[in-house]
Structures are given as C-alpha cells and as structure tokens.
Amino acid sequence: MKGVEGLATEGLPITPGSPFADRTLGDTAIRTGASVVAVLRGQEVFASPTPDFRFRVGDRVIVVGTEDGVHAVSALLGSD
Image (cartoon, rainbow, N blue to C red; front, top):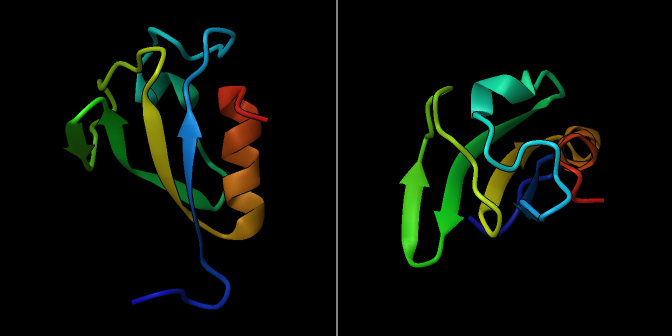
C-alpha cells in the first residue's frame, strides 16, 4: 500500500531539546488524530509501543494519522 488519501505517515525524531526525551509515551498524552505505531532506535524496531515505553534522544517515532494530527504530534514532541 503506497498511500491512502487522508492518511499521513511520518518519522519524527526525538531531539536533545524535546520535552519527551527520557519520558514515556504515556507522558505525551497524545490525543491528536494520530497514533504512534512504532519507534526506531538504531537498528531496533519497537512496534506498537506501550504507554510505559521510554523515549531516548535519537529515537525516530513513527506516527500515522491525519495530516493535522501528525503535525500536532510533531509539535508536541518538539520535532517542528
């Protein structure tokens, strides 16, 4: 599946300035029309991370949802 109209996918970095570096997915309280479906950490893939998953600087957070929802998650994570 190449793309679905109305659905956006983005890999958002956890940068040193992110308010969620060293905090959990549950701490983000994401309610934006987008979901975190995986986290890439180096060569490791964490599919369907649970609320207690702790982000680290350098992680790439894979988000799927509406374009507005993905942008909102990007702003929340400090990736904008």
